[in-house]
Image 1: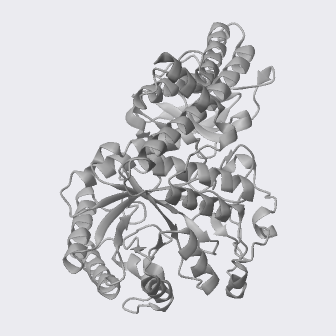
Image 2: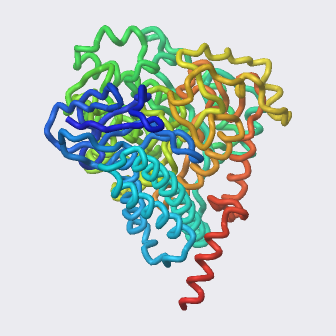
Length: 545
């Protein structure tokens, strides 16, 4: 059993939020167990004897409220000090990425290294007080954690800027930018924005929306965007076609949940119908998403792989020129600690890459800022690191969806209905509507946030940084904004670039600027006023030569 002590002022804390708290083991793979808070202690009861790390939402000061892990720790009767172990992990994580990114030659007087040194010094002071004065030790440890997160964020931005400079300066085509467009709305002003600010569209095709009744397909709404894309010569990524999450599965399919042979045949017919209809318009087929979570239809491992093999082969046989992709969602793998029949996300990606399937691409979907499982807010160093884990797959990667909300969504909130007649406002430049910036009654610790509780402006800042980091990776072919506009069935409420009332958010301008900078090959993760540390590094490097 792992126990962590937490203090509030000079007394043991009376409460501590544990939303989305879970355990992970070696290689960040989930560990089954229960996490509870009692009498100033976070108590983690594991179902195995392996060392584990506690991951939970933490107030990280100026950096926001973030999902952070402790170091891997063995069981012991004496409580660990929570913030000390959080700081220990972050200081170590910084050193790991310093080496991974070949930045270990940064001089000690570099601003980033000076900030990391302050974190190390505070951590050392906390270590010395851990047993004699745990209250002061927690204060020093929390200071160390905040400094280390700050140093790590700057290192991440510096690394992204360096990669972008090399990637956009080598004469090869720059990475592309897409947007995910739900079929519920179509209007010419929306299409004009897509033509201007994006290179292609990603059209999700949920089974329950395209075939609400068995054998009865509703193509009309999907046809509108796909027909427009064909006329506009805008490439299309379609899917996922197979997705067993509740938001995608039609009610009638659950009848065959435990009849694999019938399910297999139904999937075959479903894929065949979609590919035959749209193969003249689609460039990339998102064949399957979230199969590794294996939550609604608890299939055996060999059945999951069999379905993926069938789907990729069928699509290739029907559309040889089309490229095929399998998507990984919830990439940090929180689900695995509670679902033993699931597969860890990166392990699944590696299995798919090594399977010999007729696969062209691997996709990763990253969403933050919502209280749904897997959508808690992570800092940029963690996001960059999880993308790095795809480096060795030997497949090009598409970030199939990346997004954050423009406000703190309420738990169980009623999403605003889409307003078709409001689409004409999409190019008007109006300020974000109040429906996206209204204060939430949901506790701010329910999903975390970047720097401050989510606002349209903070969403725009986060999205530009995250997209810049994603497209800086040389193995990332393109990135997709998770939602073009807000709609009632969005996976990430409030995550669109345009509000449900048809008004552009600051995020739309931020993405348009990013797309322009990509085309001009001038994109950088940081703005000029954030680059003092880059200039200092370059100057130091020049003097060393």
